[in-house]
Each structure stands twice: as structure tokens, then as C-alpha cells.
Image (tube, rainbow, N blue to C red; front, side):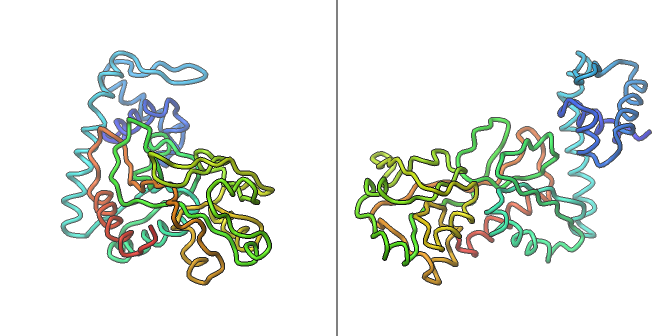
Length: 298
């Protein structure tokens, strides 16, 4: 067996706590992952994992190896990648995660643009409104909106965005426009459950924002769906500016309470702490910094 494959199988199994999850991350069978780890244990003459019916744990020797093996594998990947890329350009797969709406609006197109200059690269884009575990799912980089709470992740800021209150001309003709934030309590509001506080909308400076309790008939977990419902005159939506570009330009929706700034958030590229970032992933993040500026959607 190849020592590098054995080490990769051990690290993936130790980090995910499961041969099955490790096999999915490596793209091989469960049986082969287990065999790689067994071969490594035989090579070293020591048990690395404690196997039970429910999970896989580390022995003291396994803990020692896990403390150093990921950095060794990252250094080796970086070395091989650097030598290869000098002659052939970037190769392999980059696994990317993003939220559904933002991924559809910008990330998918950004990857296509980056891919034009790197024809030997492949991309695995996974869209989900939950924050996936990068180690467990083998994600190289995730594009996330809002605060980054996980200490095991490193983040690079790509830009800032604001939420905007909007409604259709038909809704405003029927129900009138709110004059102050408190008026929102008497309007039909479209609730986006992806927000941190879906039914409390904050407007104005952060140190003196007005928090208004809102209600409405429609509750969705998608900014794009909230925009669609608002366009049909079904209520007021409070969504990130990047989801509104076409609707505002066409006049299908109009902004409300312009004197009260919407909540601000940060767009970041995040990746696992404590590992050497592959050059192709670093190049993708560098490209994303410029691409989001050119796109002008934030």
C-alpha cells in the first residue's frame, strides 16, 4: 500500500470519526479506507484507532500522529502542486460551499470565470443554507455571509453587504408605505427564516438601531423566494442587497425607509485553521476578491 494514501485515510477517519465519512471524503470505498488504516498500523507496529460499533476513537499513538500528519500531507500536496502547476497550471478538484441564494447569484458564475483561465481544474459546488462542517465534508473553501463563530476556521473578508427593505408598487398603492420603522408592525411582512432574528428587523445605526417585531402570512427560508413574493405584491421583504439587483433595476421593487440603514453583514471566504492552504485554493480566493468587486452586487 502507498504510505501517503494510508496517512490520508488515517487523517480523514480520525477527523470525521467514521470510516464511512472518511471514504466519502476521499472518494473510495469504506472497505478500502479501513484497509489503508490497517496497513498503516501494521507498518508502524502500533494501533492508532479504537474501533467500536458506533464510532472510531484515537489511541495515544493515534493522537500523536494526528497532531503532525495533516501538516505533513499539506506540505507534500503544496510541493507536488507547485511543481506541477509551473508546467501545467492548476489541476485537480476544488470543493466549494456556499448558501443557496448567494451561490446561485454569484459563486457559480465566479467559479465559471475562474475556470476559464484554469481549464484543468474541476469544481464541486455544494449549496446549502446550513453551515457545513468543512473537515467532515472535505470542503476546501466556503463563502459565508455574516459573523464567523467557529474558531477552527480562518476567514478572509471579501466585502460587506446590507439588507434593504423593499415592496412592490402594487403593494404600496394598496397598503401605503411605512414612514418610520415602527410602522412595519402594521404591515404584511415576508419572513426570511435564514436571518438571525427573522421576526425582529433592525434598522438604523448599530448603536441605536430600531428593532421592530414584524409578522406576515408568508415565511420562507430563501432570500430569493422572499424577493419573488414581494414582487407579486404580497408584502414587504427585508433581504440582502445582492438578491435585489434585477428587481430594483427593473422597478419591480422599490426601497423603503431610505433614511434608516439596513443591517450590515460581511462576506468571507473561510477555510480550516492549521493547514497549509493549497495554491489553487489561495488563487481562487484571490480571484474572488477582485471578482466580487467587479460584479458590484454587494
